[in-house]
Length: 87
Image 1 (cartoon, rainbow, N blue to C red):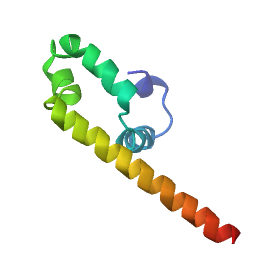
Image 2: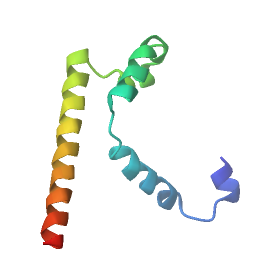
Image 3: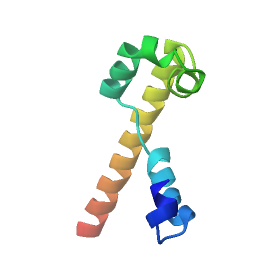
């Protein structure tokens, strides 16, 4: 790996921030459509199928709905906080 030859920072310092970013990634309708249109290619490998095609369409729909609900709740919270701060 290039990191082994050229890296100065510990591996965890490189990976942990990226992992945190990945955990906060929201799958919106556009990303879901891209995954769905690539389903045949993703099924070719067990790891990609497990990661990107974990369940039936209802599971994906519920996940997207939850993500949207959480996004709206966060937006509302931030808006209310701003309004209270400005008042």
